[in-house]
Image 1 (cartoon, rainbow, N blue to C red):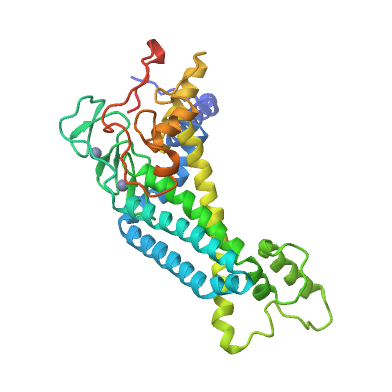
Image 2: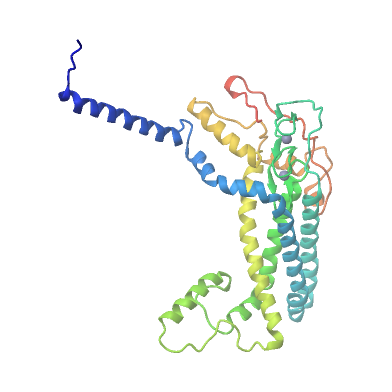
Length: 368
Ligand SMILES: [Zn+2]
Ligand SMILES: [Zn+2]
């Protein structure tokens, strides 16, 4: 006959063990949910930005035409205001200055319009089914990918030397459109700055009236803060106004137009300057936006092994820019004729094969 033995004294120990196992399991579960040996700050940032990427991927097709309409509308309104409000103001000051403004302003305008149209409507370059050098197969196109080619989820096709998909152009910035995109940014920046300088005194007069302000007129956000603080602190009734009190009803549209012109152009100039600096750095290093991320990871990986990374498509600052503009020695092209003025010339090469140095061992780098 079996005899039941009660081990009550072991109960706390057994309870502690099972609770310990339970908490270990919960801890492991928690850790496996978000811990990854390869996780770093950039992965965490990308994960946080994932909803934005999803939104852009999902709606970029529909945002493209809207953004393009905005670019065309804003550019057209700035040009119309310049002709109708600022040019007569310049003409009233000096005829010789008017001639300069007509020549310089139209040179900028022609370059802006030309490069925008070319960047928006030129095919950025897609690989054919038969290519001389294949580095991988695109899982979405089920086709071969040459070096530096990437799949654009918005265009739903592979793009040669893809940099990024630009919603403002509703097109991909790739092998055949990169130069037009960059030049458009540069001329748009110069154009916005030029309009700001030309309309500066008119803007100051209409935006501030005769009220003296502590900051220069171009720092209008600081002056607005100053005005609000001043009004809040002041107990006496305010007698001045931001806007020129002498502006009559008939001049109201002129008044709003010159303020609109300056605010739009200054905002565009600041935004585009950041974009230009970003792309200037990448082009100088012979890499695209996508390659910059790939190269950064590769650089860190090799540094841990004590090996210096070198981008195989980096031919030095000057040569990188020559290649980018398509004005290398022997092409017969010049900076003045082909960059300062509209030119439809294509980049050197076909975008399918790229000259690059071969590295041995760990230096061997494939930019897929
Ligand atoms: Zn593809
Ligand atoms: Zn695209």
